[in-house]
Image 1 (cartoon, helix red, strand yellow):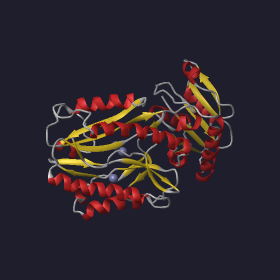
Image 2 (cartoon, protein in one colour):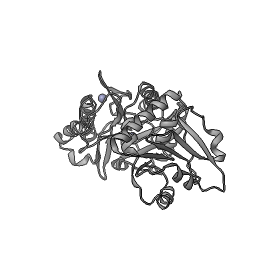
Image 3 (tube, protein in one colour):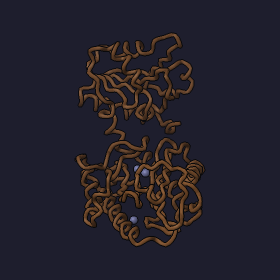
Image 4 (cartoon, protein in one colour):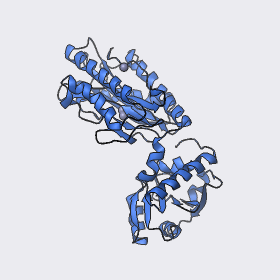
Amino acid sequence: MGPPTLDASVYLDRLARVRSAMDDRGVDVVMLSVGHDLPYLTGYTAMPLERLTMLVVPRGAEATLVIPGLEAARVVEQPGVFELVPWAETQDPTELVADLVGGARTIAVGDQMWARFLVELLHHLPDVAWTRAVDVVGALRMSKDAVEIDALAAAGAAVDRIAGELQRGEIPLVGRTEAEVSAHLGRRIVEEGHQKVNFAIVAAGENAASPHHHAGDRVIRPDEIVLCDFGGTMDGYCSDTTRCVFTGEIAPDVAEAYAVLHAAQAAGVAAATVGTACEDVDRAARAVIDGAGYGEWFIHRTGHGIGLEEHEDPYIVEGNDLPLEAGHAFSIEPGIYLPGRWGMRLEDIAVATDDGPRSLNNSDHDLVSV
Ligand code: ZN
Ligand code: ZN
Ligand code: ZN
């Protein structure tokens, strides 16, 4: 299930901008299959099938959507956006696609296109230089318009309601396994309006020191930290938030580190102004944690872009000197992880706007005792 179908003019505008990016980069054709670029440009989400679906976008001609015949009924036709070419079960769709590219010398393919399709295309088009579609479409997708920001905000508000329940002790923890709490969060994510659960990490005590811990049969005990990082997809756009709670009176070492984490997260958000390089946002959060002596325990980047995908450009990481623009949406999620003891992370989605950074997650930032 993808984003809702928009007016054809939106897709025509996006395709025009893709073509201008193709001009800039000397790309003759863009090919998109499974993945998020396809719905972004056409409103159609391809099923992850072994049967080939491919949008072929030449720089100077109309786009064509090559699609398995039995899927054609799901396509909402967009006048002027693309021509629909269904293929029959006995046809070779790769050949159909190869015939559409003419004398193209450089073709950009979607990141998530299945390797088998690309391997088959290599055989049909031996002289083509291949490149990544993310270099052409990614910059566009990074800059969210007002409708997209609204969708991200709605998804963010939905997970905030769940975080509130967690912080008020309305989601029982002690005596349940991490997996049970994870299932509870997943259920709530759907009840709050998401169509899909993307993840619900629940990590108790020492397990929280592993940032992507897989919730298991570890029973949650009194007097420990419980890290919950969860999100889903609502009407095509993703949510992602992390809150930690403590099952009892907060241990002094945990409270001390959490105060640093909270300050670091706030510093990251405050730094996320239009024109600031992504790496400077990372540095702003990291400096607080480094300054307090926890630097070696903050073992990942500060954040990732978010939109149709849970993780997309721009990445908030050292080495990314891309300046933030109004409409860039990304997580600010510093963490401190002490192996064998505990871990903690605090995560909000932020949007850079001309009026300054806007946080799309607004549940309590404190380490709440439950
Ligand atoms: Zn997260
Ligand atoms: Zn995240
Ligand atoms: Zn805060």
